[in-house]
Length: 434
Ligand code: UDX
Image (cartoon, rainbow, N blue to C red):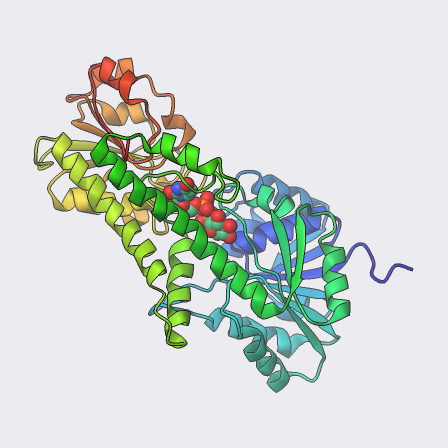
């Protein structure tokens, strides 16, 4: 006997990255999904078929599911909540004064509770500290008599690969205690590949924080080794390749460069540091991970200064790649912001170039000149500064670039170029640990 129907009535609270991707994927599986978003401007954009950020494949997936009426978007809890079987909380939990700000969680929980009619499962997908479920339960109990089941199913999606990561994650972590809730959530996720991990909601929440602290630890470790390699003339890429061949270490997240940015790693590290302080533990490894990441910017800017014979004052420097990583328009904690601010402070004239993120970058970089075409930007420039490794920048025509630049200087913050090849063409090249 089938305990649950194959298609379910789902509500997703929050039309950000996590919410829209979750909604689109579950709608594609045949479920009926309503997204609740309180930002009217965002609803208007979405109803015109526009996704408020760049995420490959998402617009098409949303459009096709809106067309078949499996997916709809509203600002009304009253309309969405009463019929729902499972509600996903996908609202933002930014850090405020170092700790996770859960105000959006609590305000949406209150709105859900006020509109509940039947027993429902509420799944927290947002990244929240362990212990949040109990606080959320109390808000429900204060507001409604309707029975709820709480679970925590953290997301592990990467921007730019969000759909792929949702469909084919390494694992689906289901944090729940109630047997029926676990069965229901396993059923809902059955078309998603990857291993299953069933645990307590608190473990699920800690798995998310620990993962988002461990991955940047690998990056900072690689960057620290790169600093030593840099001094000894050793190629960091060879070192990391050899290291990554050990299955216990693994080859991923060992690319040395300008370090990590984005909407998750920096904020989750801060939240975990806050959490550890709250229990009186000095998480010194994590503090060092953060410091190493910040130091990479200074290290790189110093390299640019020496490439420019001791001063960047008045020099035209072209920064290639503005978003925090390729395939996204997200500028949050992008390394480009730190590099550009430092260079501008030192008197450089910055031309900022990106294939996608300019509309976001203009909001946070007021003094730079913006370019989409790298060749346009490089005309008469004193230096090429690679910050984000978009594919567009990997196979540039350096013969042409040599002719149009004023000084043939390349500072490669992501180690994507070949030193020998560039030096043969007459460029002066600096990478990070190579
Ligand atoms: C990350 C996690 O990967 C994802 O599982 C989690 O749920 C959300 O946070 P995301 O922030 O989208 O995803 O980006 P990711 O691809 O992980 O890269 C993060 C940052 O690390 C980028 O700035 C990237 O440039 C940097 N990075 C990554 C390195 O500097 N070196 C590496 O080897 C890998």
